[in-house]
Length: 190
Ligand SMILES: Cc1cc2nc3c(=O)[nH]c(=O)nc-3n(C[C@H](O)[C@H](O)[C@H](O)COP(=O)(O)O)c2cc1C
Image (cartoon, rainbow, N blue to C red):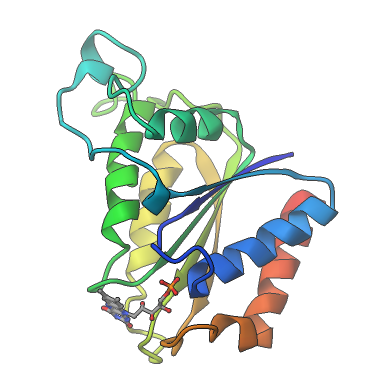
C-alpha cells in the first residue's frame, strides 16, 4: 500500500503534522510505503487557470515542485492531507496545492460523472487542527474537501480533527487523537 502525505502547515512538527506522522508511522509499521511532502518547503504556484490540462495536455503544465507531489498521488492508495484551520479554511499552502489538482480532471468534467484521470478506489484522510474548541466551529472544511475529492474517485474519506488545539505540542498530548490516528491507519492498511 502506498500513502502520500501532504502537510499544509509551515510547521514540520506542528499540531497537524504530528497527527499525520502518527497515522503514517503506524501505517509504516503495518507495511505501508509513505511519501511525505511539506508544502512549505516546496516552490510552486497556484493554478494559473490556463486550462492546458483540459485542452492540449492530460496533466498540469506548470513545471515546479508540485509535479512530484501530483505524480505521487497518481500512484498512491491513500492520500493524507493535514492542515491547521487558518481563517476558517485550510492554509494557503494547502489551498494552492488543491487548486493544482484540477489537472486530475479530464476535459469533460462539467458533464461527465466519470471525468477523473485518477484510478478509482483511493482513500482520503484529512487531518484538521484548530484553536477553537467548539465542535461546530469550522466543521464545514472537511465536507467541502470530501465532496471535491469524491469527484476525483476518493470514495472513502476519514476526518481526524483536533478542536481546542492552539499552542505548540498540544496535539501530541491528546491521547484520543493519537489513538484515532493509530486506529485509522490500522483500518485502512489492514
Ligand atoms: C494565521 C493563523 C490563522 C488561524 N486561524 C484560525 C481560525 O480561523 N480558527 C481557529 O480555530 N484557529 C485558527 N488558528 C490556530 C491554528 O489553527 C491552530 O493553532 C493549529 O493547531 C495550528 O496547527 P499547526 O501547528 O499544524 O500549524 C490560526 C492560526 C494562525 C497562525
